[in-house]
Amino acid sequence: MKPVTLMLVCGEPSGDLLGAQLMAALKTLCGDAVKFTGVGGEAMEAQGLASLFPLDATAVMGLHEIVPKIPEILRRVRRAADFAAETGPDAVVLIDSPDFTHRVAKRIKRIAPRIATIDYVAPQVWASRSYRARAMADYFDLVLALLPFEAPFFAGYGVNAVFVGHPAIERARRMTGGVAFRARHGIAPEAKLLAVLPGSRRSEIRFILPAFKETVRLLAARVPGLVTVLPTVPHVAALVRAGAADWPAPLVIVEGEDEKFAAFDAADAALAASGTVTTELALSRTPMVVGYIVGAVTYTLLKPFMHAKFVTITNLLLDREAVPEYLQTRCRADLLADAVAPLLTDKNAAARQVADLGEAMRGLGQGGEQPSLRAAKAILEFLGRPAGP
Image 1: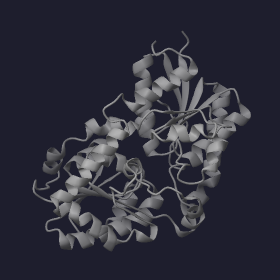
Image 2: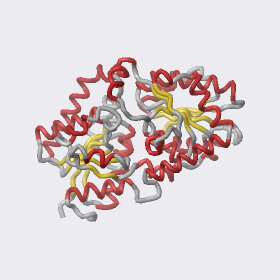
Image 3: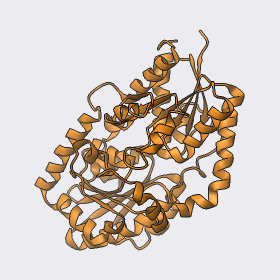
Image 4: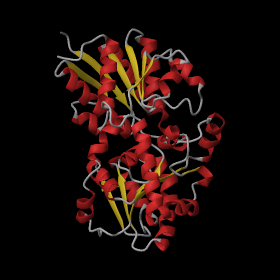
């Protein structure tokens, strides 16, 4: 039987991880009878993808960062779509980063309408700009939804959608090694350790890291012997290290997935930007406080379209604020410090959130079939291909 050829396209590191997990699941089901092309980062390349171009221009957010790169982003949209039209894969799987990947999907449908397009990680249009859901029916043949309420939401707009669960669940087994992490970095077993996670985009480092740094300064005065760990990724590591100069508490900066997950296992609590990392922290049962800031112009433009009560998946699934959220003008060091301190000093407060995190992750699919395997099966079923070589 002719191999299945899939073109995968992601735009930033979180999508790269999802793409790598999907590739691994497809290889488990199909063996050598699946071939990959497209755009990815280090994780997808480790699974055998030869990326058309790096993610440097597309892993951006906010007007200040996006505007200067618009010409390059549009060139890459054209290059990815044109490559699909030239090579004719069985399907193109567009992963997360809707500002980039949806443009690729639209162009593919315009120049090669017979190529199937699949959206992996439905954009949170239920939270803002819900009118986009109806438009997606024109350029996506299938949507793989990560959250249980998303499939019926999209169905209401005429979009073919399937709930597959959140692939981050599969990383739970990697959230180990905390004791060795502390020993490796000279952190005493009894020291209070706070994981600080300001994001993986340059705009997030610019806006969020200063607020988190000031929060640590306030916490250091309230929590004796506080130690901090800051996991980062290569493309913003230099920016993070510069922003962490004169850090107000002992700090360990680490890179790499294994070190990040070991840090989560070692940490007593976390201060995190909104994003996939909050789901990873929930899987590691690390109690957290979430903060997020975007530029003033970006916020002004987006605010009228924002309808969701929460930004953190745990809170969305539980329909209550189990994880404290401090967004935009409320993302202030004094408020953040007041929310984080109990998680470091009050075992009951930490335990209550840990219980909530467990409840939310079970609702997300933890304990069932691996989401990336479900996603792979959904793709093969959609293409009418058996799961096997």
